Structure formats: C-alpha cells, structure tokens
Length: 190
Image (cartoon, rainbow, N blue to C red):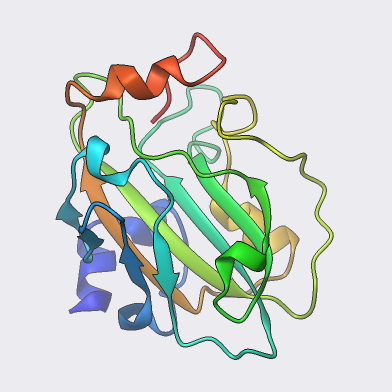
C-alpha cells in the first residue's frame, strides 16, 4: 500500500527518484492529535507545530529529515520547484530535537485556489555527520525555502535513497493568512 501511495500520488518522480526503503515505518504525529498517513488530508491549522517523528533508526547512525511541498512550480526551472518546509541534519538516531535544524519548521499554508498540495516527509541515513553549504533559515523567514530541489540536495550530499517517508495533503483554508503574518516576506508560502 505504501509503495502504491507514493507512486499514485506522483511523489516518485515529482520529488524523489527512489522509494523510501522503510516507507511504513515513519510515524508523523502532531500535537493536534492528527497523523500523516500516506496522503490523508490535514488542515493547515492542525499542522502548524513541529510534529513528533519516529522511524526504525539505528541509535549509532545520523539522519537527515526533510519536509517539502513539490507543488509549487517554478517558471524559471521546473527542476527547482520544491518548497522546503523543514530540514534537520545530524540527527542521532530518531531524536530530531538533538539534530541541527538548518531550516526551521513551517507548517502547510498552500496559496488560495491552488488545490491540494502534497507535504512529504523524508528521512535519509547519513554516512556520518554532515557539514552542508546552506545557511540557517528560521521559522519567520521565507528566503531560501522556495525553488529548492530535494533530489539534488540528496545527491549533492550523497544521501542515497530515503530510508523512511510519509506524507499528507492540505489545501488553503481561512487559517492560512495567519501563517503568512508570521513570515517576514510579503510573499506567500506553500
């Protein structure tokens, strides 16, 4: 079922080229008592706080977590269409709080009249600790989030295929303008 969901929802090839190895094992739970479940619909209000993640992690390994929306097309370069909602590297085991948040979490906020957007969580096993050439992006900053490419990032840092993944879908609702107020840019987020 998990493999079918990733293919049917176009996550492969829209976001990544390879199916996560342990797709069913990534749990994504929000404090609002909702969970991502391979494409279920969640409301932007329900996913505004950073979720708790759990996967079959080796406590001796380091991991990278990414949350991205692949549904923001770029006119300049269709390969750089992903919107980066969250990027945490050097996570020991599955203790995300102990990792290095390169891009702080921002929940879903799809623009009005753009339909459902896919919000995809991916976990990559690192080959040790990473030093990456990306600047820290706080939760109030838009710059550096749009026009990103998840697969290019994974390739650049030789992360291989993800080891776990999950996703939900969301569309604009009356809470989204509240999210936009918290971002320093006048642009909208995804």
